[in-house]
Amino acid sequence: MRSSIASIILLSIGVRNGTVAYSKKQRNLDTTNLIQALDEVKNEIDNKLFLYLTPDYQWIPSTVYRYDDFLESLKIMSEIGVAEKLFYTGENVDNGYIYGLINVAAFLAQSMKETIQYDACDENSWDLIGGKYPLSNACGQLGQSYQDYHCSDEEKHMECPVDPNMSITAVTHAKWYGAPGPLFCGPKTEYSFTGIWDHLYECNRPWANPPETCSVYEGQKAGKYDNSAPYANNAGRTDVEG
Image (cartoon, rainbow, N blue to C red; front, side):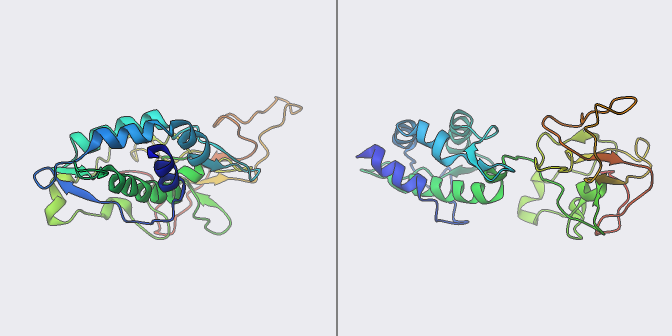
């Protein structure tokens, strides 16, 4: 019965944006029974729930989101938490863990919408400006400026200062034909300006002299970084500093 309940709740991901967190002082949470219920449907979660849509429109198991990693994170968030908040796993009463499973389903539903279906944990470059993908999309898409967002006074202690000298490259990215490579940021001393991802460029040309291959990311079929001229994102940025 425990397994069938967990399967129904977890595989019916109709709940959206309803994840619950509780203060450590508020509840006596039941993590043990919830984890036991999840363990019983581990294979179903990996092979029927954590799926992403390929460029060929096939749903296959994610390479990024796997049950073991999810479970490790759930244990941390339900036992240690962040900012005195714990992930709600159900009350420590008879069948209390079932409410925890509903909370897990809500969380995974939102995760599926935002990331799992794309097999990505980093933001993809998708804001097309004049038919081109600005590399400065890394600093904000749809006219946003990510570094200008600030936490509320209540959460100010968790806000990280902007580091203009930071250099970092995303791990994941879109995978369709010509999809932009991973977003990256770096100081203006390294990139005085940034251009575009040319998604129409044919990089797979072994017959050329010299031969050319697609080497930005594994499975790449077309496209390249083009920094020959500055190109602004929707907010007017032509750099990736900060």
